[in-house]
Amino acid sequence: MKQNTFYLLLGIVGLIEVGLFWLSVVLRNPLIITAGFIMGVGLLYVARMTVTDIREDERAVLISQKAGSRTLEVFWVLFFAVSLGSAVIGFGTPLGIPRPREFPRDFPRDEPHLGYFGIFQMIMLCCIAFLYIGFRVYYARKYGEWDSDEE
Amino acid sequence: MKNKIKVFRAMHDLTQEALAQELKVTRQTILAIEKGKYDPSLELAFKIARFFGVSVEEVFLYD
Image (cartoon, rainbow over all chains, first blue to last red):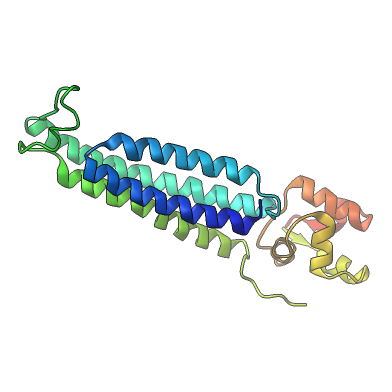
């Protein structure tokens, strides 16, 4: 598989994931997006292994590793802090966890729930992509990705 | 870490792209090493030295 074909596949999978997400919302079935996301990522991992014209040397690998590790370093602190806050609210109110056989039809309930924190966490999860891109740009610049040629 | 890759490249009349192809890395990596923005791995350092037929110490200088 050519690298451009992989990027095309990446875009298609992304669109399908968005579709599955809203299908999950409409049907109130979280299993659709959960299973769909795992399958989508699995498909992309397999497809990436078949890319033949990829040109990635040790510097490119270092940039990816540094950006990935720094993203996680920052993200887990932010995410954990927000989750702790939501846990405080959660323990201060009735949890309203539905019994398994009722789930997901009775969800969300009219009782107090963690809706706003859920949304905030979802936004943060989306922000991880931008955080990664930011770190990637930083390290790519640090290791001379866009330096001009002196020849 | 300083290096003399540019000097050796000039002595062998090689472009960055040509050297990069020989070493199976990207031209940007050669450029980054020459500018001192990236320190190559030991393996790549030895490959560079071996390609020019000299020792690692002759190409790379630890300052």
